[in-house]
Image (cartoon, rainbow, N blue to C red; front, side, top):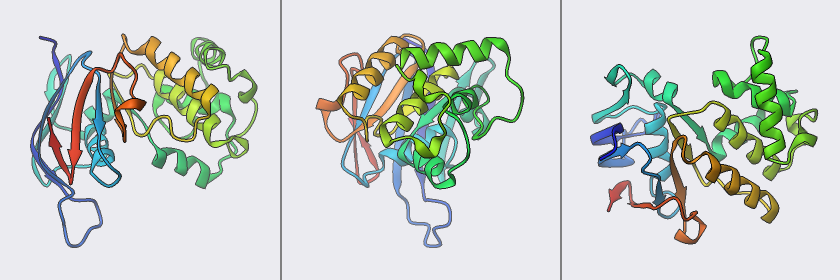
Length: 229
């Protein structure tokens, strides 16, 4: 059996800023294992995105425990979660659109290496070449010199995937990953993702099983904040 990379034990949580502290996830138990790609299926508002944010280390349990298993053993610091994961989500995309930073496509891809919203240091020749290679794989060389505010929804989503893959995460978290993609971009997106699926473990959300690639064999269902088999 493959090694555990994330363990979630009886976790319930409420969202930050909710004065009522109403739980939106309830008694979640899950062991995510290396190479065991999985789709989380459920309707809007069921808790899928919240569960991804928990695994990312952006949210913290009100009850129960989450641990990330790295080379030094299990850790329960959210920093460990952020260190071993990448997340692509509508919320992330909306943040880039809302901020309207004067950021080129090249710089957006470069931010993936340090997992920061902007580029804060000079990049190495290796990283610059890796960005060129990723843009070529995504058929997105024409976006490298354009700025984020000029991108369509699909163009931005495509580059956010490239940004996440450049980070080489242990766990790649994809929230409604094909939202906003036309057929051409969707094909490129999933072909590239499939090429990287042997290098990282993928957990993705979906409304319908028909939107899930064949190599993502696992299925877990989320209903009303509960994780079902």
